Image (tube, rainbow, N blue to C red; front, side):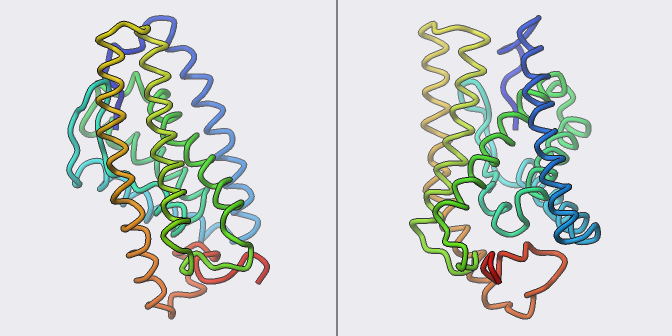
Length: 227
């Protein structure tokens, strides 16, 4: 996952350091909340599993450059539902860093940009989940409409942030507008697939009901928030 090098450069890239720091600060808060609620072992295990998945999303699943960035099947809403907000955020940060260090060193200067682009939509999606999924509803029981809303929120947030960085860095010239539009159109096609993946994964989790209470999964997956 990366916005093309050179899109944001010079002093303008300093903004990404601030946005990334804020995103990491909120991730730390979520992690502290999860630590108090579920314990260190559960947080660490979920974060590790999710980080491996994110690395696979970046490097194994099909991905290709379009316009100002790359189109990936990141499955942010799937990570959120399976592992919770804090492990999902930690895994996205860790997977992105691992990708940069191991395979795409040219992406490291844009780490703050890409981190912000992945994490802020995740936080917004988590907030939306709290609003549209009743407190007593386990995640394994959500419907297609709810999964679609979560996917649109996450993928749409990524497109919005990529557009922001592109316009912030390069302005509103015709070529840049076309590049942003082509990326947005290609990326939003992920919305057609992600809800189906979410429901398939949740159905599999529901069938494996013996996993209820596992340290490896978000508690809300099998039980309502008030349980």
